[in-house]
Length: 594
Image (cartoon, rainbow, N blue to C red):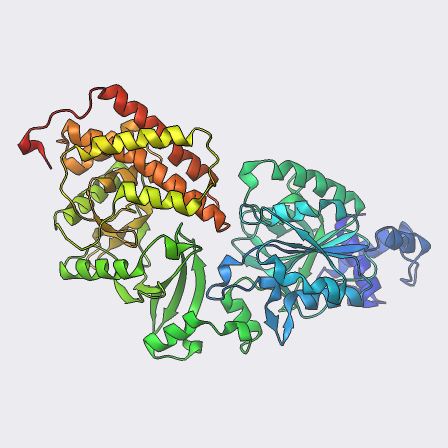
């Protein structure tokens, strides 16, 4: 049976259609196609001449009857900003949480064997076990993976099973006491973020952009076996760490298991953003947010005039939210997990005041910065782009901008002491450290820091977090571009050459690229003593961010590959320094000191 025949059979059975035109109206198929399909179903014994069900179809329904459901609710819902602390599945619409609505719809169709995969704020789902007798399955790796790994935690249950994203709102139940084939629900309109599209035969094939995905599927036994195999294979591949669970539905020929269950109108809506929730329930209690209240106060507008809210890719320290108000676009920053112990917002506020005093376009344009909460609102440059670290011309422009800033010789009362900060991060991360030779590496870094202290140095306000993502190329009104350096929360008075080291290690540069970046900053005239000092900073900064990553991991945020690379810098550049300059700091003439 072709998938189009399944769709026609479904229309006859569920729509109680008794005429070809009724089937055509319900499926959207041409009348001729419906006629041919009905003739096939009658000929093969699935329907009687009067469109009544035959024993063959009844047995097929019994064989494929739903037995259980898996609801995926482990993710933190990062795109839901400015809503904080509430898992998407527990948000309410019309006074009813999304997950309870799904559970009640499943119960009404006789499905009581329900498992919920949890992770983020898992304790908040405990009440469901007593109220609805559901099983909670924990995904311990929810912070490192995506829904593909959550579904893998419940792979043993995938047999005549519904799979449902916990953030789905369904106006009418998509579930049935009888199913005859696997399916996946999509909407009729186009979505460029979709990975599937519907063919004329109502099949789903892999695509870059296609029908909007609903996050609901039904898997019969045969297709479920294929999906279980895919889950095992894909979850073992690091390339699929952040893949959605629908990736496991794709077969070897690029075709998705089951047919396309095309949903029209607003019958099914995945609630992924603040705007999605506002459309479905403008009175939802979850729309009340102190970030929204702050924007309303700052711009003197009602909440309805704040539009286009969505999360941007979060940085390693903060979360960013885009919004529009009064015809302009803005960014709101909110502190990330554990940030209070990492940075001082009072110091950051003082830095921005010092930058403003120069009268130069050095940084981002700040409209609001609260030194108590860490909330910051800045103008959003729609045509800005971050520096490409593999483009030497852009890197050279960034180094010129960095040196231009350093030449202002700004002085504040607080310092960024690399050795003291390293000690502090070690204290924060406590005993968490996966590298067996860490103590030896720390001793080596201490030796390099002693060398750096013996090198030429003049301290001034430095950025410290001078990674390429923080250098933006912004277009002026005349069409030319200028460099801006954003995010000054780690900033303090220090050796400005530390900023060069920080740029290099975040870009994962090798020694040749590092030397090139140093030459860009110094116009090719860097004294050997200063070059050695920057190498020492590269090793020390690598160890600094290694400890930073370990502290963040205690907050549930992990940076596996990044942490490993930073630790490698600590070890490799110790070897470089002691090999190139075994006798210590090379001599430097007074006029060479830069």
